[in-house]
Image (cartoon, rainbow over all chains, first blue to last red; front, side):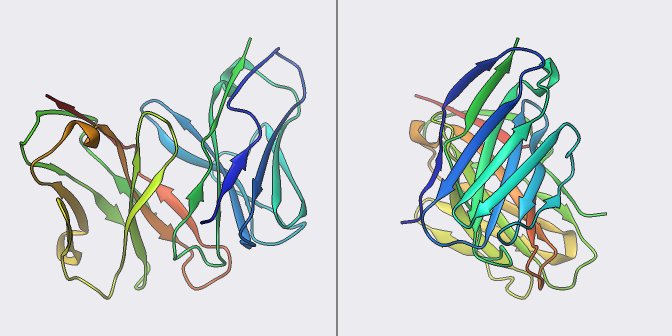
Length: 113
Length: 117
């Protein structure tokens, strides 16, 4: 089975800190994604990557950046965390094209204080 | 614009009742894929079904069934004889950018289903 692992289940960070959220998948998937989930808003795409060192902005990229130096790892970076970035962050991976569906990680609940 | 609408924010039923979760989508693509995912309280989204735009056959898997109608742009999900374990948030999703390497899912806002004993 494909497994997507997010390094932290819960994180608490201070406003202004630089925050790294890490995601690793073990099934050689080409595509990786970062979503944030907020009550009443569903899942919104932040960034995705369809190949190593490639990245594409999703629907809400402001305040975030990403890094994909290796195929299996996709990092989400909050350059200067703000309270409005308090959210559940979900990482997912898929084969190229995405039509077979995604496999999701368990999520990281980030609180910025 | 591509969009997925799940108009029902929350539904509460009593065990053994049937329940239908609605999903309406918008897309200009002629070929597209639709999905349903379940998010139990543990948080991890679990894949339930995929349907492509060329296949309008309804699908049944145990107590779950899906009704895909292109004429009304709907992809509804019915749980028959609901159980407490069905309590979760259910998301409908549309794949945009099909045919390229950059296909990605756009999700509805989800429907929270509570099944009470």
